Image (cartoon, rainbow, N blue to C red):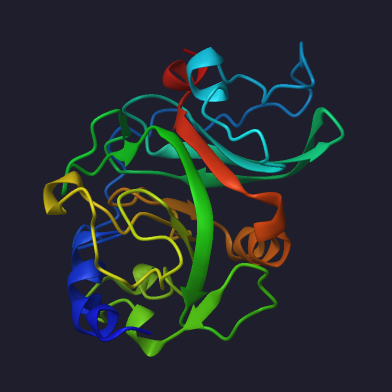
Length: 236
């Protein structure tokens, strides 16, 4: 891990996923309905419920998509679905109840706004407090991932496993790397990480079983991406 990552680790943890907002705030978490797996798919060559704007941003060579379906623009509740492309068709592989930013979603994420950024982002690096569970993505185990113990105990294991979402970060580096190419005000250090039962500072949180499955199955050779946002923005 680069020296910059080590010196900036504390700052990242205080300003990113679950940050100083580890207070269990569930504002905006209206309704906990998950998307029904039986929902009709009109075109199997497209990711369900994703409109043209974001569909067009999925790279042509991507064969794995982690779709994060937010319940609403101001909701902290979401559903994560892994899709795998077989031939020309996207097949639903697994799904999990999840959480996103405490205040919901935004198309103009800023540092500290407690909203997750809508968009399509690559997934290229992983890590965590725990040993590598067999990840296909490059995995950096480091004690520096550990959440501060002055946070509520419910948040202490948030970063046991993380997958960096390539929003305002340098690909090919540890998720702890504090470099933000678009500037500090644009926010960063946005991860998929372990769920603590409520909204995050901007990340997407998934149960431990889901994180383990994603780590073991997301394959760099398949160019995995995350497509994330509230239902309305996704459908646009």
